[in-house]
Amino acid sequence: MTPPPRFVTLPEMRRAAHARLPRDVWNFGAGGAETETSRRRNRRALDRLAITQNILVDVRQIDLRTSLLGVPLSWPVAVAPMGGLVLFHPEGDVEMARGCGLADTLQFLSGATGWSVEDVAKAGTGPKMFQLYHHGDRGWVGELLARVDACNGYHSVCLTVDVQVIGRRERDIVNRYDPREAMKVAPNPRGPDSTYQARLTWDDVAWLQKTTKLPVGIKGIMTVRDARRAVDMGVRIIWVSNHGGRQLDHTEATIDALPRIADAVGGRAEIIVDGGFSRGTDVLKGLARGATVVAVGRTALWGLAVDGAPGVANAMDILRREVKTTMQLCGQTSITKLDPELVFRVD
Ligand SMILES: Cc1cc2nc3c(=O)[nH]c(=O)nc-3n(C[C@H](O)[C@H](O)[C@H](O)COP(=O)(O)O)c2cc1C
Image (cartoon, rainbow, N blue to C red; front, side, top):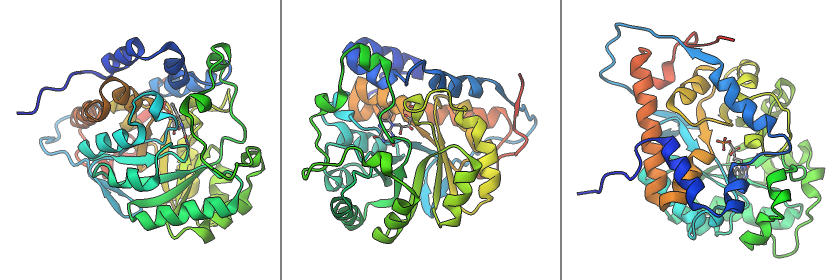
């Protein structure tokens, strides 16, 4: 018999992670940039949305299945790419892959991983996609992309574009904490041009599309104009994100930017949203406002920190149960056919 899950609510897991992690590591994971307004605003904007209570619908059968770029998913939640997982668990990305496999959840592997893309591809049975940081050396990135392609385990490559420079994360600055030093990761042994992210332009997106066989996404889009331009270039995933409030401070909340962007994209690309999603009700709000998939960062991270792969699965199972219960209580039976009027702003 499988043992009962250690945790029964998500806040309990977050508290356990807080209690267990060294202070510097907790702050690196939980914190945001500068005043942390972007981070808090993500959460507040989610709380300002209400969900309509539709009644007298037969909700015994709930269908959570969906797909992203033709990849079937058992539910519409993904684990966002996170660098530095080794700080939270000794087996880092490989352990996260195992957890996502146990929970049959899409995993985005961070380009700032310390593990080989091959090892992560082999670990865990869940679907996977790859997040890229462009380190400036096209030769090196090209070789990495060829390896990602050759794994046959990654279904797309999403380029993160909101790390022109690292945001001023004041908790880390005050703690004199450099996660890159703690991770001991040198992603490019030839010596990355660390200023390259600052020079990244649309030309690099076109280059990426030519260089990988996989569909290309962009992570970090917050405006209609950028979303349109990306879609016009053939970008297949528009990822509405402010990096969990870790980069530019005082951005709009992602859940507020989402409907406009979804409208502009008009079904020509898939849409992912992230930033502060930590409850089943949040997931419904993201989907009702136009996303195909909601990604969670810290919610999965605390699971990894407290109990490794079973902890990730524990967190995803609680979230999945919340999504299902919310669907039942608001009278929706299919996650891909949510009532567009389901969610509205209340204050
Ligand atoms: C510890 C940590 C590391 C992260 N590393 C990356 C990364 O390597 N690449 C990336 O695109 N985003 C990274 N992110 C941002 C996440 O992908 C995601 O956008 C964000 O965490 C979503 O917000 P949430 O944590 O509130 O769910 C990181 C986030 C955290 C918390």
